[in-house]
Length: 323
Image (tube, rainbow, N blue to C red; front, side):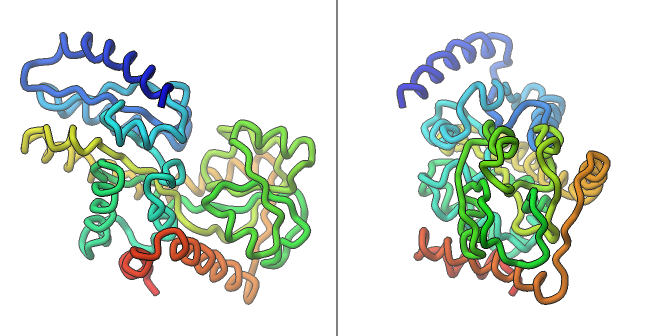
């Protein structure tokens, strides 16, 4: 909390100067991106900010104060919840302390359009409202699956004998298949692999080369599992203070951001080619082993949701899953 108070003081000064150049009817939202500027994961929000600032002159502008160097990723949920920043672009894996139900978002099997039609977005937004004091504006990352990357051959859905670097996103899945899991920050993944401390790690299909991890990674395991969720959140008090016109504009911009999800298929293919060109091979699970892999990922994920959010688990599965 001391860190957030220091950040709040610095941002207050920046806001005073920004307000001086804004029109009386224009609101300037202070935003932070949880990901490294320019990286493939950060780009959708960077494009969103650019689009909002172009289309929203005189109505809404966004002041993107920076990435993880501005506020540590695991503090961003608290920052937007408390109003230190007005908006954040962050994965639910970075705020499980505030919203345990966020563990279900990676298990989404429907498009955002479907979730907006079947009540899924409304329920997720309600949870964010009540537990985090934020408005769930939009979700990016749909269509960007996670994969296991390894430095040892793998031909079955059995991770016994492997030590894998994990995050909470896929810890249960890997452990249920027999892996020894260790958790490190992303900044330590390279040295962890280079020194042989871990035999592999989980990560989305996108971004490996951005991080330089291809230099210490021999192979990717297919198929992928889960889906990335990176969420555009707005502090609820700030959202409620906006005019109807400003809220309608931001809602429209949120749908524009979600429209970028359609580009993920092409981005994924480009990333696969980059990985292959870098010398990474693919271990593809087939037949019964493929089915076991996919089913274990799903069931491990929903078992985790049931454990951390028993009151919401059934409803979330009904809305998000297709089974």
